Image (tube, rainbow, N blue to C red):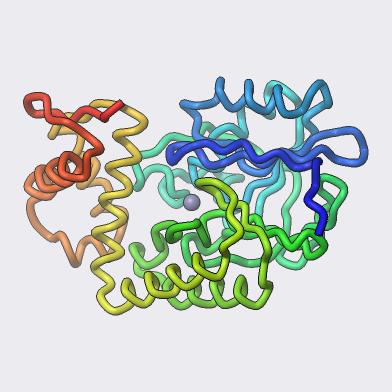
Length: 303
Ligand SMILES: [Zn+2]
């Protein structure tokens, strides 16, 4: 097995997805996913380092959540590069329909961008001098895709498989199926038998069987009691916002809980009353988890 020196994984954190930079054979550069908008300066700097003077020609998005597409607009304005996205939400992007895109109901930011090309499941993209097949990866997001390079045995798994777990199953929150799709995506990954996974968040890993096993147990656990997915989503959304804002008052948290409930049918079932009490509970959870400390009626992110 040879591992490509034309791929550079810029490992970020949880607010920003990883950026995977490909040195293409035409002398240009492609980047898969562009991070969250508040990290744009850092994203530009890291990509500049990785591209070593080559021109950035294209952005490829695995999906258009704010932490994967937040740098699209800024990078496109700076480099004049193309943006390629999966087809599932392209009409919403055309209209920039924030109510139906995920940004409003997650209380997250994503500057408006336009795209130049759609990548469909089964398309083969030439990235870093290798063929990468676009594979469907519904579950976390109905329109998400993964990229698979058979020759390198390498999978860009986006938020379908991390070393520990996977992304929130968002469709289920809106009353759409997602659990079965996530199981099918995990099965597909199992069939590919990747030797290396480059996830959307966290370091690349090679113990794929262990990660898959853990992910299978997790999806079964969520399916057993779907409320767990909602509880987890709320926790993840609050933790994400805390990373972005660093400090959130109880009023901020209450507004977020309210927005989440309004935008997600499942949450209306689970949390019908009292967003303020829910917000207070979430604040307590953030402190308990060691993510935040209390300051009066606010929680502040632990540095
Ligand atoms: Zn995502």
